[in-house]
Image 1 (cartoon, rainbow, N blue to C red):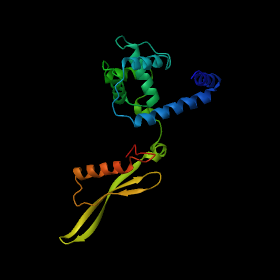
Image 2: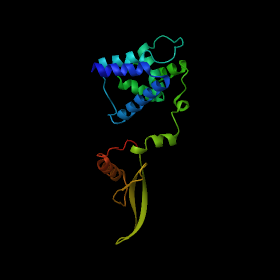
Image 3: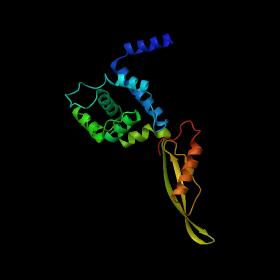
Image 4: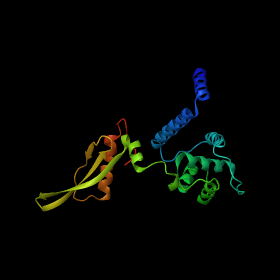
Length: 207
């Protein structure tokens, strides 16, 4: 254990700025992948929140004078979440709620970012739509309906089929057809799609 820890310290101590940036970006990406596979809400323990607070305190540029009433810990977390995720005010507030921090409102988040000179979310975009699609191609599926007119014993009817397409491989999964694609039917097809793909190496994360 000591040898492993020592080697990591040596790596960080001897790394160049460029290598450190790549290492941090790798950790951020790894964290995003893990977060995508976790439940929507995670309850942290007091000791875990304390660890996050201690790590968040040294981050960010020197702060401008601020109004009283905003505690130091939530302020630093607001700044850190904004810089590392590109989230808007409401999503930042949601992240704080997940960490058990409830005594802060959306306007306070907005004021903190304004005081720090951090632009609103649309102006902090992390990339184009094309870059997003490329980054998530392995786990991204598109879905849409197509119709086929058929002759039946009761006359000509339109049959609806829901199609799922894997963005990277162009693999197609088609559902059973129906005359009435209501919400119940669509929900059933979505569940069947999840069952079909849940054992894959790269399970769907975006639809």
